[in-house]
Length: 200
Image 1 (cartoon, rainbow, N blue to C red):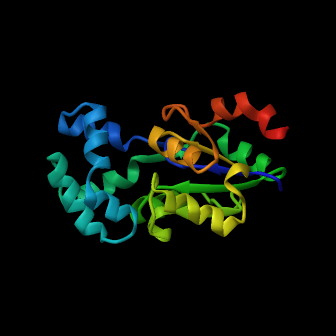
Image 2: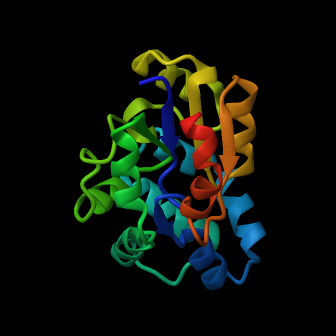
């Protein structure tokens, strides 16, 4: 396989409404909620698998002033990871017949367990990279380097899809071809528009 097609998951393959929900619950704008979440060192540590579900949950309740007990937050946090976007599972399975496929997701133990309960990833991806399992998060270069090292693909032979501009920019800086996806519709419109390029 001459190319590795690399996908983020939340907002790309599956619906992820967490930031929108946090904004609504806290009274913040979506942009403010996203910035507060992304700048939290506790959130980053959780995505690297360094702290427990309980520590993270307590931090989020305090950080956003949420009207939840710890147990209530854990339930909501899981449910904010939604179903795959229409057609995306079959599309990725189809790509796998012509390319090597992989996912690279900034995620965490609660989201991961919930996602795997209804979406088997092995039929879709040759390689699976979850931040809390590899102890690295996007957009740090080390996170992408793990993908390069473990798959054996050079950066210039990797095509990456993500819904966060910083992650796309970091991939491009390493030499990957990268596309920003609209998180409300997922990867399908983007990949349809570039499919001829992928096949060339």
